[in-house]
Length: 121
Image (cartoon, rainbow, N blue to C red):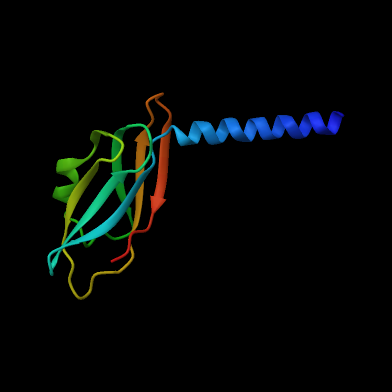
């Protein structure tokens, strides 16, 4: 009986965490091709809630998105679910194919979040 109570308690706690995560912002980033030679870095919210005070940081060298482009658009006040921000990306023969990016944002409750993503060309 005692063991069953502990198992039920653990299952309930897991379901609470999953429900809370399902109702949060979830940011991601990917490169998209526009035409034959143009590219954009797209930062998007695939979660169920808006993300506030969104910021982006390149981990390592950033030779693809101009710093002025990042400074003009970030920090972004908010990104609603299903919305995205696009940054101009300059791709050339020596451009790395994989980039490490850290996304930081606040949930509607004010909780700080961060996620490392690795978009590839």
